[in-house]
Length: 64
Image (cartoon, rainbow, N blue to C red; front, side):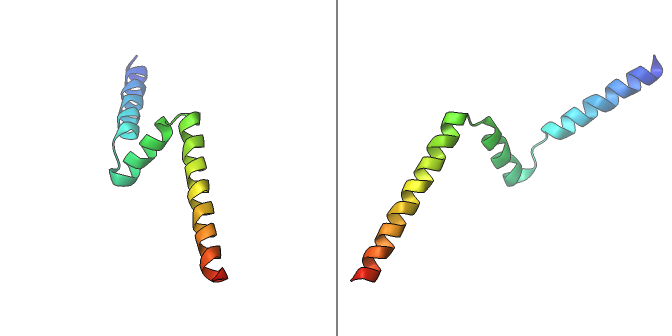
């Protein structure tokens, strides 16, 4: 029983440590983990559109 209790306490301590915020990067990672597949696809689409717009603007500048 004593070994089982100590193992349970150690597991709880590990769980608490894993849930602990690790600063800015940790909070960003947690936010990213919470995103749904739809959110991820929307973000990827938005980034692609911005890249295309930037490429188009660069092409227009080099053309003139």
